[in-house]
Amino acid sequence: NAGVTQTPKFRVLKTGQSMTLLCAQDMNHEYMYWYRQDPGMGLRLIHYSVGEGTTAKGEVPDGYNVSRLKKQNFLLGLESAAPSQTSVYFCASSLAGGPGELFFGEGSRLTVL
Amino acid sequence: LAKTTQPISMDSYEGQEVNITCSHNNIATNDYITWYQQFPSQGPRFIIQGYKTKVTNEVASLFIPADRKSSTLSLPRVSLSDTAVYYCLEYGGSQGNLIFGKGTKLSVKP
Image (cartoon, rainbow over all chains, first blue to last red; front, side, top):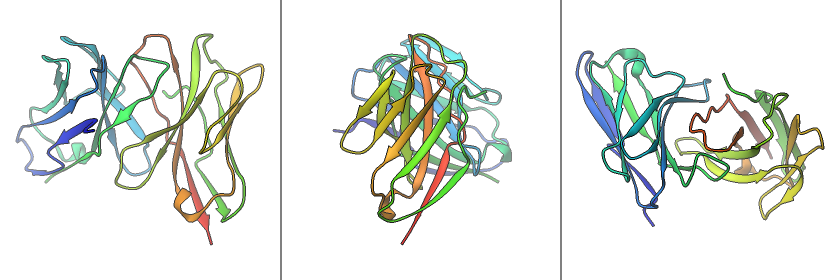
């Protein structure tokens, strides 16, 4: 029962470096989401995908790119990391956009120095 | 912007019933109300979902009045382990733009 798996769980970057966060789900869910969480800010939607090959912008998309080449995977990329992108990133998936349950991963903590 | 409004924080004591209210004045006809619970360093997890009237499960109850402009999550006899952030989310149909608010931080004291 893996559910939603995020890798890596922790990462430290220097300003300007690039990296990719991987989200994998084994529930055959159509919809996938990337959120970031900062202290006192709740969850903010970065990008989402309503199916393989499709992506869309959420609330705070600037500085991030995403890809959904396979239904089970949703990648979040930072091309040139900035300290403002220091955050905890959560991936989620759902069978459909709603109503229904969102299943979240355990989070990836990213620090940009 | 989030479609819902909740209190930022609430305090309670063990054994009490806690009611957290969420406002969603412009809820769409097709939208449901869903509540999530998040513990520190963990991803949120689903608690309960409803469309109108009352829904109850083993964890909580959800009350949604006829006008559906608000909803109340009720946690019976809370314990220290119920200390968490609770999010109210309004969504339905087929949109993927699911916006969470800042949630309500519930602190349960002994």
